[in-house]
Image (cartoon, rainbow, N blue to C red; front, side, top):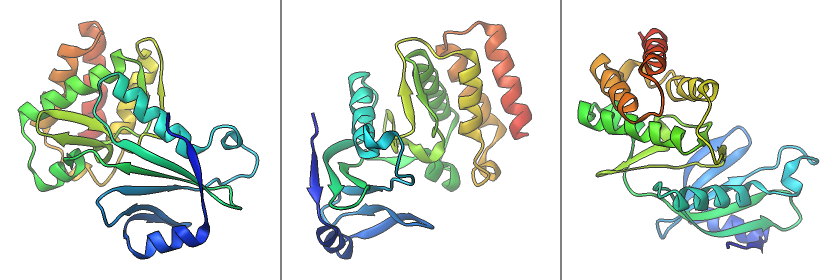
Length: 220
């Protein structure tokens, strides 16, 4: 079990000075690459009274990574958790999953039908195993040779049953909704993705056909 340790603002600032900013938003830094290759993810608590009082975001982040490991789904490895002294925010330090994101490969045109077929099989496996990863999109799927895994795993639930048809449709919309990815998709890659999902999903052919039709209509 990963315990949460105190970290002063001054200590955090010193770490930030020696690190590379990977991601930020309007509130500030979200992800840093540390000098030793590890990553630091900063979780801001936006409201004073919410569920993070009992279950901080960094703790849920680590818990979800462990759940994926138990399911033999490749992911990042959380090494330490910290709370910022005197502040409601938390931090996770982790080893990233090696490889390239599907988004990076898509933008570089380095995909092929075989790889997309395997991604379809992977998505079907997530749905069979009850992994509802709301942030499933090409930027959070990592390819490392024959390994396919997930990163940025905060927004996730794992159920002991296969995902419902409604949840699957919603998950597919999350996967395809990013406008930045759409110019790079090719019809043959989408076909391979759907063939992989069809062959591995615990759905009837009719239901898989309905999913495929919705996806093609959404993209093309």
